Length: 269
Image (cartoon, rainbow, N blue to C red):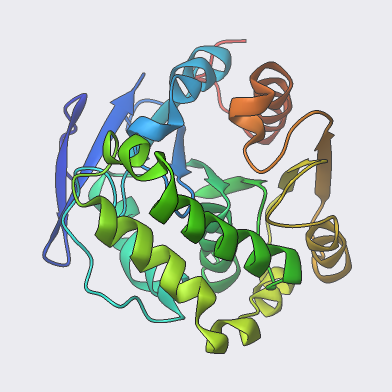
């Protein structure tokens, strides 16, 4: 276990991963570990981690995976199983390093898929639930179409400059993600097999207008999971409900977190 400053870097498998720790430390209260999207980072969560910490009373740990934000670059090209590698190799070490004792995973998009793989692959008694924002369990046509379109936008609009505010190696971040998803071999990517092995409650937060996935993802979770699956369908939101409809998204995740953690006496009512 490493004593956690409010922000800094953790060394995991030779990479320096930037992080922020909000609220009580993992040895004092449950911790919500947040896993960002395919173009996300610590900073791109905005103020959602602060709001989640205030609403739940839990600690909130946010980090940037290798290749994102201020973390070390990732080796490119990313393999098509890069999310499996994060879930099976990196995340277990990170949870141990921060002294994770009990709590939740909250993941968005790629981060949600990583959370699902981790939870299905590890019967981790410390984990009390997972909240998945716009998860991917299979690759849909709409996903590939939108990812091809965002490549065009990156190369022809101000999107690159906007993302460069949040990533120190913006081309590596963008193409590392984009090229993997557009690799023809990625069309066979499917993590639904992990869902049957999840043994904690699941919340799925899905925007009605998600341009990267449909309600098919939710249906797969309901079909494959034996654990309880709650679904919050968010009107007026696309792929990032926590940015596009923050109040209702925060309420859904907070209610889920409080229910999952309600037996913990260290949390405020």
